[in-house]
Length: 346
Image (cartoon, rainbow, N blue to C red; front, side, top):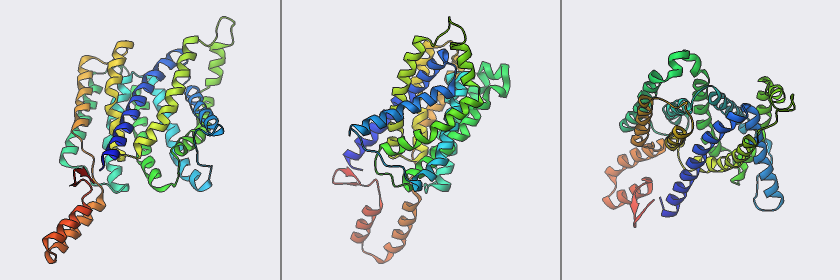
């Protein structure tokens, strides 16, 4: 891997990490003032579409046109994306931030399996299985110390559990879309997901009677109006939501589905620390220790290489019996993606 490629991967990971951690906290603050999760997400999606339309009109960015061949695969992703966002927002209204982070920490375990079964990756190494096991143990340890689990039982974990399965499918299918759908611009995936995701959010809002509740809370009586702080935070959420739309697809294109999922877990460490300073719904010290175990597992984990590399290596080993040493060395260099050559990894 060249130094330019390494820099791009690092920048993509940092951008996604910052936006992901920020959006969780911002949305939690928004819901404190405006407890309408689907409407909040719908506004954020609409703001991103408005940005894309405005920037395209003035020639600042390019975007792929709507094509039915591209819309069809993105529809399945949009369903998972919309359901995942809805489950995440419902979880934020009923649980603390740490609960969502821990359930998200279980996702790399499921995505690693999907990576191996459907996306051409090897099964995780023993070291990676160990790291993923630590993540699971940390999550279970957290559940045993969480006050909401003790008082409400599994009812407190319905939405986070559903979020876990939906986000795991979304992560794996999103990687498959990048590999199979020929969009030419970086704005293309953002445009498709936000445009196709807006109608389901409106539907979720209607099903949850959020239009009715918002009217009753904010407009039915003269003394009630949308709180200024809530509107300011909503504006900030629109900015961060647009940023994560770009950074997430950028990062997803640079790493495997499991690694992308794991990055989303690891960057939540900062989210927890900030959350402890803001909210009084944070976890007990034992719960934070369990969460730290999850993060340790993330550090141990290593991205699995592609299965094609293993098959090609086996062919090279078999053929090496009849080739001279120099030919074997040249072939090995071509088939080994992380071999160092002339000071660079290629």
